[in-house]
Length: 426
Ligand SMILES: [Mn+2]
Image 1 (tube, protein in one colour):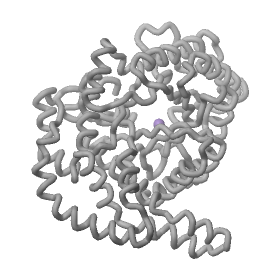
Image 2 (cartoon, protein in one colour; image 1 turned 30 degrees about the vertical axis):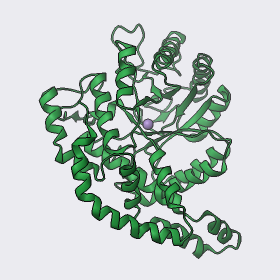
Image 3 (cartoon, helix red, strand yellow; image 1 turned 180 degrees about the vertical axis):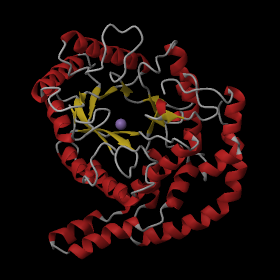
Image 4 (spheres, protein in one colour; image 1 turned 90 degrees about the vertical axis):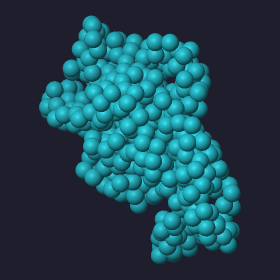
């Protein structure tokens, strides 16, 4: 399925009048503050977030998963779903594949399909947290960190294969999230597990083409509940440094213990030029995979403030690879992703509004109250007209969710795919 933008042109026209008034009111006000509104809107239009192929079906918990009718059952259908999101928002211009769930049968056809939907292939994700059919070795007790060399070799070889697949798709990055850890004290030797992991990552790194990056994701717990080999950003950074300049840390918002100061982690990594990837979601308790901005929107804004500062002041840090890594157990996955995209754009727009010069002055003069005032003035601005303007300029939908519902896209997907289609890999 592919949306023709003419399908919602009429809807855009009917909401366009109200939008024009709201945008003019905000733009006038921002211009009076010396803000270049046109370039702000362009920055929002340029901001693209990758959608992972596994987010297009309903998520689940370890207790069960309830499929959503019409979810994509093939790689082609997953690409089409991201195409729908991108057509409506012009902010989801990339797809992130998971191997082995999304191995293309015909690379030329898959590349052409992605191009037809104006999508690129972002980082590929390897999987050594599940046993694959016919695999010689099991990952029950670990993969890259395992005490058995043959297990480690199999996991390294899998990552090499993922890089080779990505090369054929025009991708240029690999994300390694390592599930390895222990469930009980004494089960593993921490130092041996870390040394094995470093050695394995170095072997994966050697296989990277020159223009590729490797992102090392960390997580404090889960699937194992006593320890995780790459548990925090410090461990990830240490491993990235041990691999080389093409290796970076990846921050996933849900992969922190409660109340961790993520914006400070972002600032530190960008100063060191080592923030490579970024996964968006939100959480109440742990790695809850909730819709971005649904629980802690102010925390998201503060994180974006650190990201914007880094992008403007740290040329040593590459432009990060953005991806949504959330789940949606009871929502329509596409509607949930539209909500996440909107929340990301909103936090980004607000962070762009922070008066960095005035903030610096307030910091130097130790005016703590003014520092907070400046941040909150940006946060309290209703930036939604800017987001709509950015979409309008690109022919996307002024109101993506209303348009998605008005066009009855889910009903069309169900008609095409049936009510019982099940997203591969989940
Ligand atoms: Mn993640």
